[in-house]
Image (tube, rainbow, N blue to C red):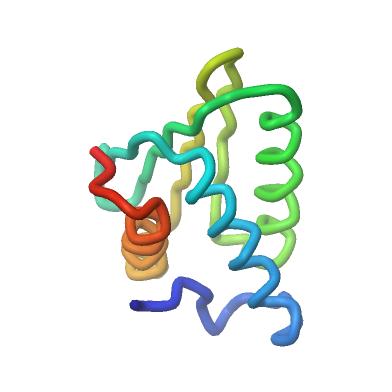
Length: 111
């Protein structure tokens, strides 16, 4: 499986597996669907619930701090959270790998 942590990430190397594990847990527990509206954007649909929106905002906020090329937009809702992830063309391969990882960790075909 391709790793989606790019060389440009400023998160200390020792902390990178922990961050990946946080995203993996989110994908495994909450991912219900995803789409790729264009080559530089990925939209994830996550099940909502108490505190989930805050957890997602916290996680993507920390990720933006070390990988500033990501642009995250969280659209919270009571039953579903939509997470939009955009990158510039130089980081398209990172978005491809993130999409691949999310689908694999979710353990099923995610539409």
